[in-house]
Amino acid sequence: MTTAPANVNFDKGLGNTIAAETEMSFIDGQNGILEYVGIEIDALARNSTFEEVVYLLWNRRLPKKAELDAFTKEIRAEYDLPQPIWDMIRSMPKDAKPMHALRTLVSALSLHDAEVEDPSNEANQRKSIRMLAKTPALIAGFDRHRKGKDFVKPDRNADIATSFLTMLNGEAPTETMARALDVCLILHADHGLNASTFAARVTIATLSDMYSAMTTAIGTLKGPLHGGANEAVMELLNEIGDIDQVEPTIMHKLKNKDRIMGFGHRVYKAYDPRATYLKTFAKQIAEDTGNKKLYEMSSKIEEIMDREVASKGIYPNVDFYSATTYASIGLEIDLFTPMFAMSRIAGWAGHCIEQLADNRLIRPGAHYVGPHEQPYVPLEKR
Ligand code: SDX
Image (cartoon, rainbow, N blue to C red; front, side, top):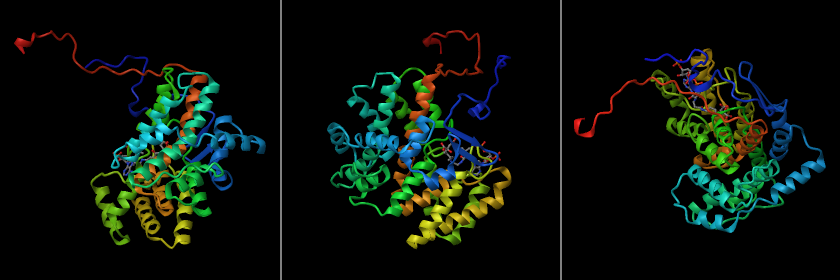
């Protein structure tokens, strides 16, 4: 076998490689710290809104009131979809997975954006706003379609979370539910060079367009090792069924070296600070709604995982308690990862613009381990 060239290292999974500089998220995996532009995630979850966090990530500072009002107005003006996209949703198979539908629809939006090929920073900022603003309608519209219901158009007098839940359910959400989703959107907005953000950067670094980069990112987020984990957590809770089955099921899975979804992280070897906040939130919602079963089962799973694998640096990640929170808001399981995408558009777009500001094509090497000096054997002699 040939040896790798001397001046490079083979870092499988790139866990020990820094591939970009960013001014948006700071993650301290050993101490469980996450900051957006230097502000701790807990302070933002308690005090901010998703729209304000998007402004912070994209402008590297909190907005003044007039700036936030103007930004919010710009987003709401873009909430609605081009009619051909509403029509396209109607033509989709009702049994399609929402993440497949979302990936397809975000890509299709590019066909109706005159600026799709305009690489200027200003055009990319406008396209970022369009994709952020329209994704809620894409997700809610597809859900209404698959249930055979009429579309509910976006509410330009409401924030993203409220407008989305209104489009989804056909009625305005309670303030608690809207705030719960708003906080989830804050917590999922950006997270360094996670797999889907890295995929977006690889795409935009070729000087392809923002819609192609977002489409790449959505396809990458879908995987259960990444954004798809929140749906897998809910499936695990449903598989376990009730609190008495938690211990035997989890112990059996650990014995089989199965991954317990919602636990572990490439960077956090301490409690994911987003999970800390979401756990508090999930407990609050469980108490408010009286629906304590999911929260109690989740706590029991955490107790067992803490006893069995915390010593290996395996703790709950953002997906573990977001599942319970989304279920408490009344979202169907296969809408959990689309929620993650609805929020992470902010991070993906921010990273694309950051990549273009100091771009270099991202093209790592591969270490060839196959044979050499092989003859070409004619077909009749093989
Ligand atoms: C997200 O990167 C980001 O920032 C992502 C994210 C974001 O905001 O964008 O934070 C969002 O994707 C969170 C992660 C969601 N995924 C899951 O919950 C899926 C379950 N988790 C695992 O598959 C795993 O923890 C990963 C994929 C998240 C990270 O795995 P690594 O870093 O590749 O670590 P590894 O697979 O090498 O595991 C190290 C050890 C192994 O044991 P040994 O073989 O050394 O004995 O830890 C074990 C693993 O078996 N392990 C687990 C486990 N995760 C790791 N054992 C049981 N259950 C788990 N969940």
